[in-house]
Length: 519
Image (tube, rainbow, N blue to C red; front, side, top):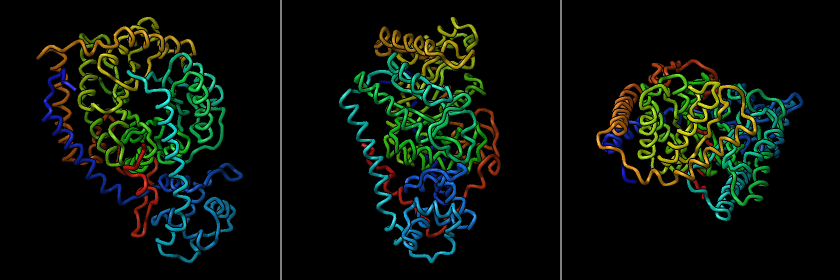
């Protein structure tokens, strides 16, 4: 790609190197620890599913039992394998027996880790094969229908009822949407368990459950076959159950996951140690499954000024990139986030937005960047909102963004109606069609507003990453550098679920998935 911004690529390399060293230092902490969510994800991948009579998920039952018996440091995989040797039970039977109080794993004889690994190997291979088959099936669809050129039009459904979501998702797909994101119900990120089954009640969204994933995947495949195009499904792989939801999404062939290294810390007050460990295994699963992750830098600009704090977005993108690479995620799977959120009253705001979007495109040339629409300065004036979204759509096309979350003219009024989505899709398709090659036809003035703005943001981001490298990630988060939000290393939700690994610990999926063949 030829640079339109005349960026200082030596400075880009320096900033990226700082981010890489921050990730490398943090990785040492990650490798030494596990969490209850990681171990529950392993249980799910080994075939443990369902709930007990009072609705408690069986993966939670198993991991809570290990935690109570102070056995979690060796890992759920070892104990399930060892229990299979000693009892002859399947992983599912083990969970049921623990729930009934008929099995105490702490009282069993212990076998060498290699024996436990061998015992669970068929279950490990079964899950890996299912996920791999899903990736192959996605590739087959894309080969048959073809990949869309230009931005993927991304819309949300959020009724709370999965069956109503399906009705709305089908309508949006038929109107021209390429990606359907099922927004999670308010507060699910703070639940330390995953609800079970199809759900019909939620506030501001619908529960992320494996059955809901399955139902929506089938619905989009149905419309995709009808329209001869592949429709992507997105959900939220974040919060206290990040690795579990990644596992569920991989098993049900989701295509995108909101999966940020820092979002839960900053915006949901989830403990930073817990989050940074959980994001690693969740991204490892997403990598192997061929899922595109979407990161949440756009959220910074909802609490901080988009002009003054733009460099924090770039710094976070570079950190997210490095943490993702550590987990095996290819650049082509990294939907790094940013947003069109400068106050429209600012003079030359559109030029500043172009500078930010073009800079992201040039610094991350292979990434399917996720570009978010204006929300902070959208009011009840739907006519102005429609114009703001049109400018956002123009910036998207001009700078080659890929995952294009459509702005709604009723953003400040209510959850979008079918008609609101139809107008948003119509607006985006009109601008994409009429401006398709505009970005290739224009250049930016040397030393002009756009180039100078990009240079300023890059310089500040590089300096910030140097500071983060010096302080370390956890100390940086304590200082409130990102989004103006301070978090404590030992505060927030979920710290009690962090456990130091013992010498015999093993995760049987890590070796098979890291950098694995997501076709």
